[in-house]
Length: 243
Image (tube, rainbow, N blue to C red; front, side):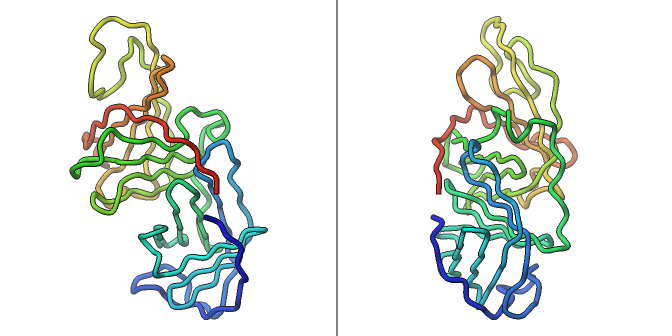
């Protein structure tokens, strides 16, 4: 939940060895990107102020005041550090990216990707048992993430390749082929994780949506060499949640 709080001058400290947080005193100006886990709400981007003390983070971004206590990490939110900045995720609510001045811009996307795109949203996989699962898949205009603590998480920007429309209800590396002739057309896109594959080894995720009104998303993953790493079948949309 986004909740108001007073932003105090805090001593900025590294949260852990190898953290990408700049070693500056008190607080630092940054660029923030707020993406609600509801693709109908526009992404907000602008200047913000980041403060940290003993792993406890406060971020002031426009009218928003965010608090991320270190004791709540991996309980009420997830945090990931990169050379570009820090990402805070409260699943089902929002993702807040804090980017340092030297951070690279988001990977360009096709025209209309953020505004007219049936692949965006939160999707529930068929199973949460075992290791070869995605669990909840979240596709945002400039971010994709999936997984859990047990199986490993992917959380990345991406580039987009639109594949030709699938005809006859078929698409590349389909888990279950149609059992009878059909006129269903399938929209297919492959997202290449940027700047690098995630820790699970997945480098590309293919999203396929049969345009038959079912509203189900079908998912395939590949490694950096193009080797198939997962066929996950149909995902169903999860309800939007507003912070």
